[in-house]
Length: 69
Image (cartoon, rainbow, N blue to C red; front, side, top):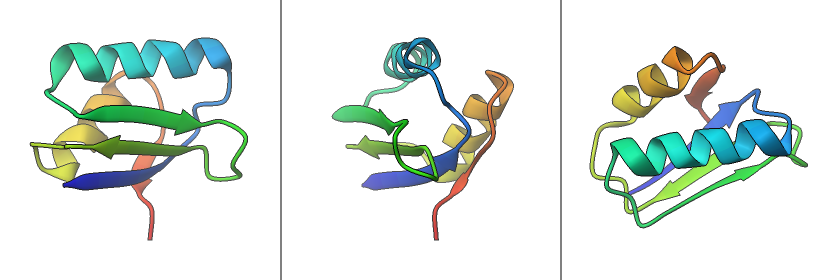
């Protein structure tokens, strides 16, 4: 499954921190944050948990996260 989320991750440091946290906590195929996009899109391929679990995890890291419609 692929999860696509809107976030407020804005710096390269925040991006690396969040990718590392996700890859450490969950089994994923790949994880990317596009900080140049207006929605700061977090894209997770190979997602094996429900989207709400990722949303809660990202929020607990101090960032906004919601499913991108």
